[in-house]
Length: 342
Ligand code: CUA
Image 1 (cartoon, rainbow, N blue to C red):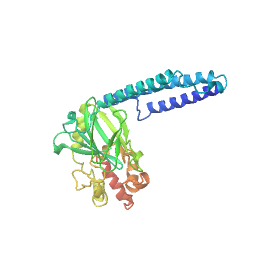
Image 2 (image 1 turned 45 degrees about the vertical axis):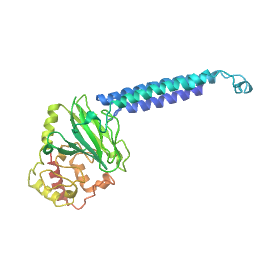
Image 3 (image 1 turned 120 degrees about the vertical axis):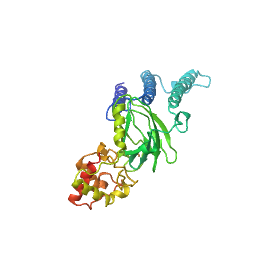
């Protein structure tokens, strides 16, 4: 009996630790921040509670059988064919089948709330297209005319309390959009765009990351969702639509010169300049972003300088090469220029 109790205690402790791990932290799965995530969380709680109830019943039965064992093996010989099988029919088939059917129907019901693909509800153009790359997120805001579309990276801005239709694409391998507080995982499959609708109840920062293994830096593909009041979002979008700020002083101008005459310009775009590279993230408003390298590092002077010269140490296998050729002053000027891209 004592051993049974100890096993039950260990199981309960592990379950509690797992549950607590899922509820807290920077990316909680059971703290929905919008209607889509809430319906998934409701289903999750229902399945979890059902699972716990079934587990408790099964453990009670097992303990009961173990506690009342008596007699000899011979007395426990298999029953003959005519024995009562109602336990097996009811306990082994009817009850599990009913529970599984209820969970299956509830799951279908939840899935129905997430139209994707060419569903008629999504006939209009998306407000945002997110394209996954190894290993960052390209975000195109398609609000207003084509001339007003704007491309940013790894930080999604949306207004609070409004539904936002998003098209999910990938540039290379299969990735998965996953912002637990706003939506379940949705795969980004080459050649097959997916549509989702997200809505955040409150302003704040919602963290997400790639939910499908996509290569060595899969774990460093973080997406921040900045949910703002409508007016702040409109103001942000207005700023995002502006071309890059010109260098503030001669030192930053030297930095711009370094950028435009080095490898940087082959891969990155800065709107309003001659940089039109399409391999890496758009840098027009780099300084306004919270993180570097898909939010793997904070956006600070030191990390920026380190990223330019030692990207392969910070994020091995990323497309960004180490550019160790810059001299001290060139590097400082380049970083000064990049930090002016607000
Ligand atoms: Cu992208 Cu994992």
